[in-house]
Image (tube, rainbow over all chains, first blue to last red; front, top):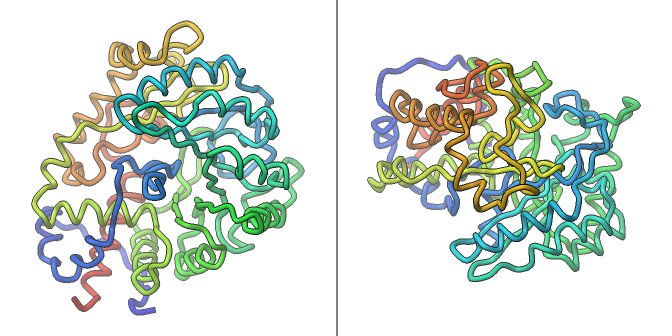
Length: 54
Length: 357
């Protein structure tokens, strides 16, 4: 596994989420462009993924 | 559109939030036909997904299930896609014949390898995993593709890796992950502050190492991140929130908060907004915001938009979780939000911090 699991307590931060994401742009870009959700309701029922196979 | 063909379930999972799951109340074909008429109308405007949930939908039997789904047809201008969420224990050759001939997509409920399914017991307290695996083997033999949704009660180190490996080996197309949560008649849940971030971080790492199946929660989060990185997250926040309505077995309609089905409160009364046997579905939908409890739920979305840094990502949380945790529908951040949205994003960010570009 490339990223060793390290249980740790969540650290509160005052940095806005947008800034935290853009600060990690290089690491996140590839995964973000692999994502292909075509519907923006991700519910417990899983129908968000229905549209992919459509 | 969610449909509840029956309240009955042949299992008695210890974390289940549904009331009346030991009672056999079956949807009439008339209710299905009324809903189908509305869904066909909607399909003139956009694609529509119809998901048969439960109880255990397969408890109605294959012939009756056919009678429920057939009125929906393929759709008008846009398609109507039907799916069924099942515990897989009842799948046999007759069901495979249904799935092979009726356009219904299958998602199975299973929590991972054998020991992860300890909560998935029948009404006698016996295990159900072997029966579910037999049903899934039937699907695979028949060449019927399926997805999987798992409920994670134990997010300890290694749990995400075990789950992801199991899903890949099972042969499913996609995986949905629900953390056990305080909801409905189930009062348990996760400690969101400690292990859950690490669980999501581990799941993200597994998916990155071997992205052979889609993971619903990661897909949702990374889609938001993509929009954030491309500067379109503000438009995402402004898009109308898509409702996830439910029609119960008796025709009662819930435009939002599907997991509130069968519940009532002193303040809100029964959580319904009319019945499809009395009023066309399209009319119920158009009038939904006039129903006080629905208006309160929509006010909750507005409050989330005003107060939560994660709104563009999550877009308002889950109505039922707000009610079951706070007794209100217009509240904002819940334990569910922290465990399944905020901690998930935190896990992804931590994974990114530890990864090379």
